[in-house]
Length: 176
Length: 317
Image 1 (tube, rainbow over the protein chains, first blue to last red):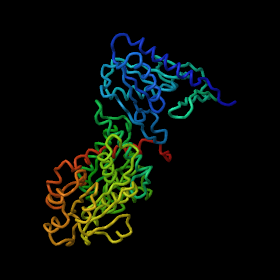
Image 2 (tube, helix red, strand yellow):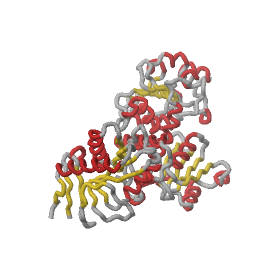
Image 3 (cartoon, chains in turn orange, green):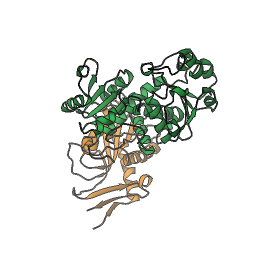
């Protein structure tokens, strides 16, 4: 069996808009929002979510990226990879509500690394997690606050997120 | 990459990749917490058979920023002064669990020997071997040039179109050799200036233009003028008549410095012999990158340690 598309481009756009609304709704009060995407595709998603948030409430949020390569717990087991740039907005993250954004939530280890990396940049008021796809199989006590789509999968299946800005096409597929 | 022994075997993509990782490392310097957990549990040994302050401290601080354990070994006051060989010293360090060995040695080829003699499995970083190579110095010089030229827009760029004039004691200089290979790989137009006695034999086969006098080279409006240190400790013969004559003919005097273009960088690998190869007017000016070179040295060494030590021992992607 070949790859099955579970989200088309319009589904992805809709999911991101919904996440943007949910983030605003959950903010309660006047906390400054900082969206930090985990490279590569998390960064693109964070930018898109923040753009929607900025349309609704201009000037209350900013966006950046947080590379986690240097914080991975499997560095010694895999070939060396080049880190991607980290961009923290000039205002910093102290006392902000940071929303980490990634494409797929799986074992939770990436998020663990991101939390460690974040702590080295400052002390946010709260940290939330937004993902486009949650495919289950957590290995750590981590859950997402905002989910585009829950996608029950088996560990042998392969979930791929492709985004127009990075891959030229826009879809989420699952293949055995 | 298993070892970093020379800049000669680096291709352009690899070299730019190292500079880009150093860019990421530089970013961590202005964070609240500067330390990264990347090399936690790894041991880096600094094995210094030759005196050095900045290179040793730079490697030490780079390894510590990456959370590695650091053991520093200097030959003075050690078993080496009792006659222990490089091989025995290296094997002792290996037995202590060294993951990487940063070596500085007065013998050209010592790092290569350590890496390839089959004595040890650790990664070897050449921190200067005799008059052969000093690759991290060349990388930090290239990084500094790129940063001055392109600023925040440096990532991914090479040195295509930059003209670099390297002046002085080329024959004894591992810094010059490493820079010649690396800068020309990165696309820079490299010129060497030195009295004939301080040029190595075979220099005509290098990818450089050689000048015997400083003025014609400075007239080319270079982007970078790099002054090499006159290595008095390696001067066992009369290479030039007197220090004053050297300063007058090949030194970056205040007058020569004043005639340089407004954007020309003045570089020096340190330690400087003020009044000999470089005047204080040049060394202390805003054109001087001497202190930036020291700062950038830590980032380059972090990048190299990361590339060599962090990944699994299988050939990296």
